Image 1 (spheres, rainbow, N blue to C red):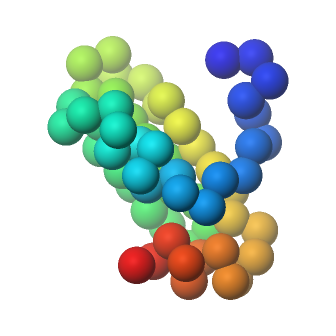
Image 2 (cartoon, one colour; image 1 turned 90 degrees about the vertical axis):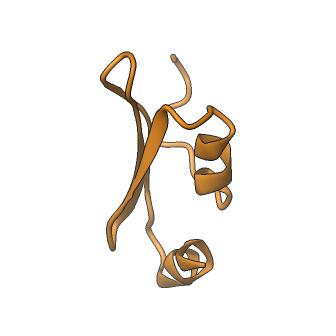
Image 3 (cartoon, rainbow, N blue to C red; image 1 turned 180 degrees about the horizontal axis):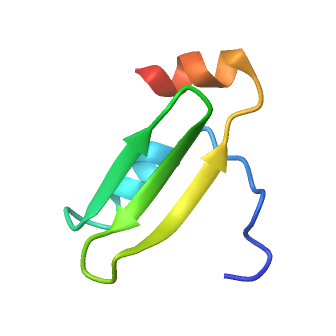
Amino acid sequence: MPGQTGQRDLVTSEACNEKAARVDVYRTHHSISCKDHEEEKWVHSYILLEASEQLLLAH
């Protein structure tokens, strides 16, 4: 999706979950990504630049 790259979102996991159970959410210390099981592609990937954001998303 053009224009969506690099966008930061504090509710990333919720946005991923809205795409239904076929989307899996992968979390690391630096990013959150969502993978579409049917299309086998990454549909969202956000890089967390601040520790405070990581703490918010950890819950």
